[in-house]
Length: 132
Image (tube, rainbow, N blue to C red; front, side, top):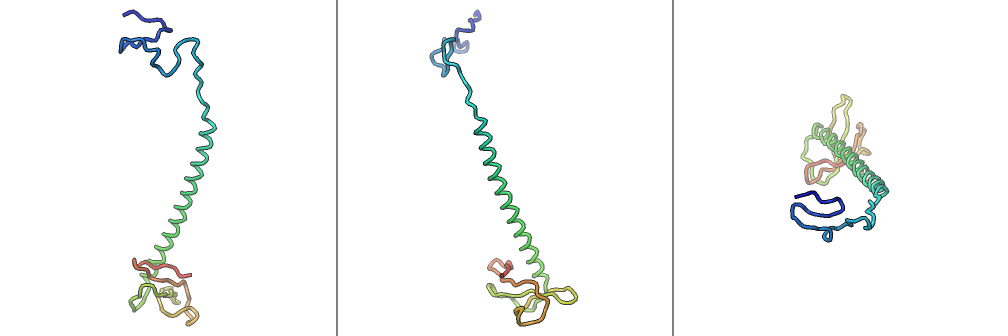
């Protein structure tokens, strides 16, 4: 088959003239196709997404720091000396001896003269939580 001129819209696969079925104009008098400028939308969206992701990242960093601190305190408590079985929900106090070893006690800081570190409660998951 011979090549059709550029201004003729012919689908060679289907062997039909299909100018009427296309979603855009196909002749010289058809309206000009103009691309929408989305650069402002992209810039605003990128800024919003970056802000959102940055905030989420900072939250995760803060949560990680808290988790790491909780891990370190739990490790310190479980390595400390104590001769009783802690009761869930009760407050206990962590102290340091002169030889740098630690021990857990039921005595509050105002009831003794030990080197006080922090107070903790044992939760149902057997994780020690800081008492403020």
